[in-house]
Length: 169
Image (cartoon, rainbow, N blue to C red; front, side, top):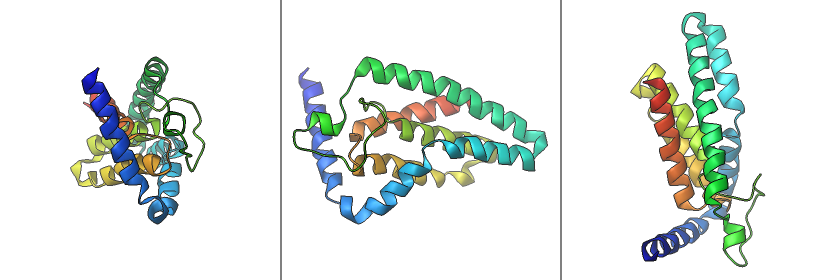
């Protein structure tokens, strides 16, 4: 328990360090967070399929399979870990946005972003690896907006990459 308590305290310190830059990054954080709401994960594979029918169907199946694994696993982790979001866990703290559910671990936005980028890199190669910067900013945006702790983001990224690699390889 002492290790978990130390990890939680470090997480809180890192959370508040990021919060220092909230006003500077707020507009970008909102945009990054919205970009990972899920609509791109449906639209882009379909557009790819329309443009490249010979390989687009397989990519659509990969994306659907990956998210069919990710979504239930994400919900199981959220419901079993029951980690409270920063506004519920930190007295007096108020987030910029209201989260869609009460638990924060892992970050679904981050998980989805890293999952999708991993699938894109598996399909088109590592020249797309800079898209991981977008996925990382999606995660950071969730901390800036006050709805996740840094470890929620880290585990969302690990989960997304892991599922993406499992499905793609």
